[in-house]
Image 1 (tube, helix red, strand yellow):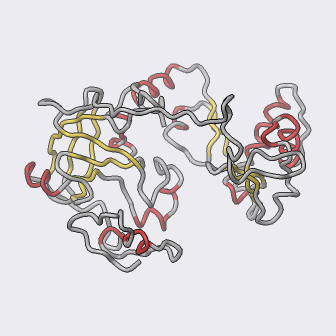
Image 2 (cartoon, one colour):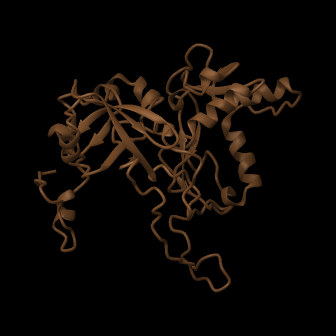
Length: 323
């Protein structure tokens, strides 16, 4: 997700020829001259590596739908059309080649990943993996880690023109922009649309109620959102989830600036002003959503243990619930 949607869409429109490989007709795919229909994880064999460095196998459970194909098949066939016959018959052969070329994957094989087995890179040639990194020191001459202090960036600070701060992040129900999760009726039922979280005190000040429609305007652009009034945010803080899309996309409000330390888009450094388009309306959250009290906690998450810690302060005004 690029931080500056206006810049990206303008670039797409200037392309002479654009090919997109995707599961669904995403917003990006709408700009494409050719769309290659890919297969999701249940329709192909393969592996994936998560942010824990854990390599796990996928097993095909369903046949690909229509003309869709696994990504490795699409790329292999494209290469063959261009005169390069790679000859792969199964993704395990691709993993074998990757292991022969990449020291971090040296001992990875489909045989070792059989069933529910997994490996965490780096993996030695004998198949020994590394559940914990840096046990023998960090990759510096003195084996010590390098730490440096961070300073908060106040560049986004509000002013008389842009008096509200937009925070941005994830929600439980959807993944990123929701290109895939909105296609799931069960997930979409829990959160059918995006919204902006507004504090009760700000809602009162601006004369708006649940379901209101507002336009958020930054120095870069504007986004139109439906309001959910909640004490999860306070005062002049707004929260616009990542699953925002269409006219609600946070990318309309951000620009090309990046975080000074991580070099990632500065989604949390946006100052806006608010225009009220409609003072109240239908709530963007259905009555059965867990935010309305119908909580379904995971059995393995023992939140009471966190609450009972001596150094944990329960949020003011909140009521502890079992589970």
